[in-house]
Image 1 (cartoon, helix red, strand yellow):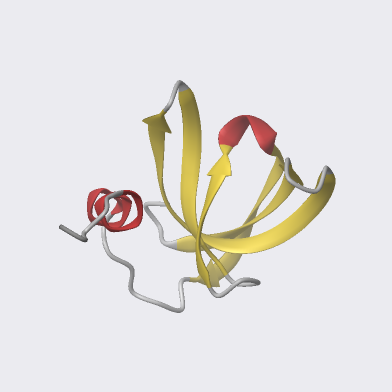
Image 2 (cartoon, rainbow, N blue to C red):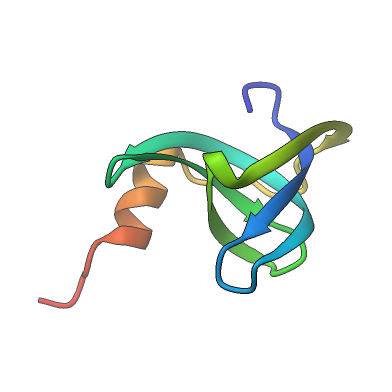
Length: 86
């Protein structure tokens, strides 16, 4: 995360009960609702995704640098998990 390098994760998707492989640009780890999560930019979905850490089966570091500049973790969490409509 600190080196801004991509990682490939093997992830057990709870909704489909399938093992998926995703290349990601990891932004950070955070604790919410009694679980740890990885917030990352998913290159497959071209969007930010939250991955529950205990469902990540393998992490493979890649030598590829991030392609994008991302907001910091705190700002992204606020943007993704708060309702701005008031």
